[in-house]
Length: 306
Image (cartoon, rainbow, N blue to C red):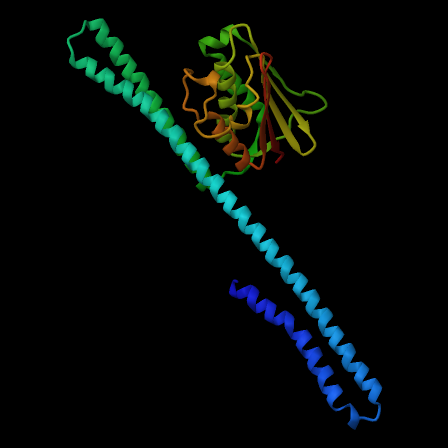
């Protein structure tokens, strides 16, 4: 038994010991007292009171020990979950690094062989693509690490302006021309309120969600951006009519380096949604995802007002 519960048990037995001692003394010396029966009864009551106090203390100790054991089990389970998440992250990181490094190794080996000028140019382009992929991966990993340690700027941010800029940025990409992009913002009776935070980080989170919608939708699909005021919260939704996310993959989409079946072969670092979650949570908000296979997906951000 741990020394702390042992000490508590000893202390719990003190009332019983004192009550029994008082009862014994009164019984022994009752013949010298004028009111014999009353003194003897008082000793009995003291013994009973000591026993009740001890019983109460023992009950409290038992509850305390049980609570400590539950807490220890919970902490152990949390450590195991964290360790498993860490191992899962390292496996995914190994996979994400291995593919481009292998491609670069093969490309450089091909350059040493005699090959037509056109073939050498294609090989160099492939190597450049893989280097850019590695650069994007390391940049996003650094941003995730900085989000956990760096202080966050707190200034009023016009989320309407940030949404318009993010939509304009993704609209310039060639694949955007084959999608229907819409932005719905409240105009009456007043515009969206500002949110407190870092403008650049919030712009990055919204851009990542729009980029994600653009990558995983098909020509002819619709991408809708909606924003509204909901009490003390500004809600932003980015919805699309893409292929959707399978139900078993949906709980994992915000995990670092997670790639579902439909995401394999699609360019990306695998950290875009993880960055979105980290940014939104640092701003005191939440981000959730809902999806139906074959119908589409909705990402919902909720950010507290300034």
